[in-house]
Image (tube, rainbow, N blue to C red):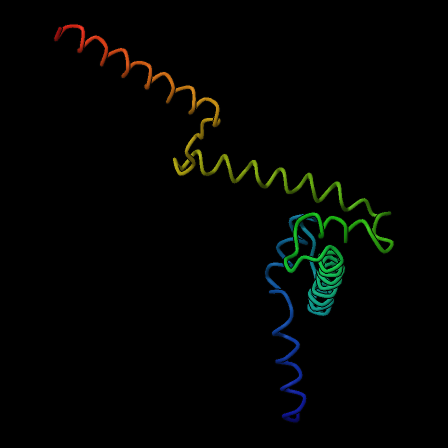
Length: 146
C-alpha cells in the first residue's frame, strides 16, 4: 500500500462517525441483527453522508434567515425539504427530542440536580407578601414604642 492510500484512508476515517455508535443505533433498532464488516462500513459512510447532507440543508436555512448559528427549526426544516418530507422525519424527530428532554429532566430531578423553579409571578407574589409583613412589623414596632 502506498503512502498516498494510507493518507487518504486516514482522512476518510477522520470525517466518519464512530463505527461503534452507528452499530449501537442499528442494533438497538433491529435486535439480533448481525452486520458483516462491509455492511458496517457502508452504514458508517451512509450515516455520515446523510447527516452531512442534513447539516448542509440546515446551514442554508440559517443563512437564508441571516443567522450564523443553526437552530432546531433549521434542522427540522431541512428534514422537511428536498424530497425528505415523504419520510415524515420532522414529526418523528420532534417526538424523539421531546422524549429525550423528558428523560433528561427526570434524570436531573432524580439526581437532585434540577431545582424546581417557581414561576416568576409566584416569586413576585412571595416578595410582595414578605414586604407587606415587614411593613406591618415595622408599624407594630413604631406603635409599641409610642
